[in-house]
Amino acid sequence: MHIFDYSFLEEGFLPAEMVNLTAAITAFNAISTGRRERYAGVYTELEKIARVQSVKGSNAIEGIVTTDARIKEIVNENSAPLNHSECEIAGYRNALDEIHSRHAEMIINEDMIRHLHLVMTEIAGYQLSGCYKTEDNIIQEIDMRGRRRIRFVPVAASDTQDAMEQLILAYREARDNPRINQLLLIPCVVLDFLCIHPFSDGNGRVSRLLTLLLLYKGGFDVCKYVSFEEQINMAKDYYYESLQDSSKGWHENENSYFEFMKNFLSTLYKCYKELDKHFSTVNGKKISKSERIEQTVLNSVLPVSKAEICDILPDVSPTTVEAVLGRMTKDGKIRKMGQGRATRYANAKYMKQ
Image (cartoon, rainbow, N blue to C red; front, side):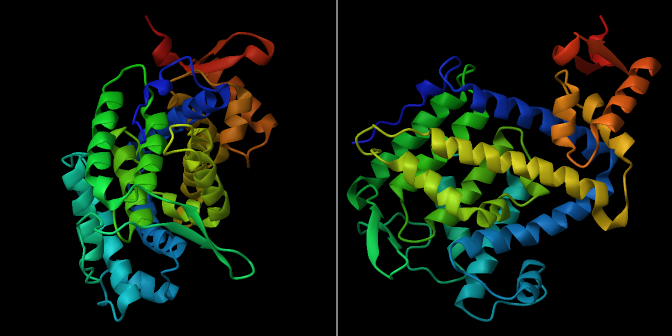
């Protein structure tokens, strides 16, 4: 029987790669927060685009597809769904909209997870909409020769209620532990949810809705403006590979969460980089490279290096970055710290006593 315990996430036990990724994402998030307040109109446009892409991407991962034109009509509620697939798409839209609009008041518990499943599936007329599975299920895949094989055997239907209760209790304990980074906790909770596989159908889509809600609860709202689901869909082989690697030995408590954590953090990092790219070109309103460099430094809570800025803004040359940093330092907007490769730049207002 699997034991739900996230104490391994406490500081000091994790690979440097993951610690660095969480630090970069946190810095990106601070930059995005500053931009959102200044460019509300741009973010409103990005939100409209991401909403359509999220509904399309999450359903496409499960093979639920229709034309782009129909996706937009359904998401924007300009047309009622015409068949079962479109009912599935409309259901995901409803659940996604609820998370975006009500996340602050939503509580992570069993009732909420079942509610998300209900909202997502009721239009399509699921018999067990909002209810845990009543029969055991398996996760299978079909190889290139068309042969089926069992990839994972989830928790038995008779043990699902207890497993979900243990998952929620473990999540709450880890959430309230100040030594655990919430960004690292999220993929572990999602992996355990997928290994339980509590519903007869729709587990993958609910896992992505749960991911967005957990991100909101952790203070990260990038997925409102860039589709996390679409990023997964574009690299779903890597996603499924990491899921399989991290679920091996799960029942015996011998699995490692790290591959799935790495996939989650990499995907989220791509969302922030995509946000920066969209931000500079949305609706043809070009924001200068100099301004983007300035905002990157000024909105970063932590001091940043020239190399880190170049990584965040890959389309901007190191020479341009260096020139803008020099001007900002001379104008007193930022302060230079350290020398050589250890040089960092910080918003001057954060350096004041």
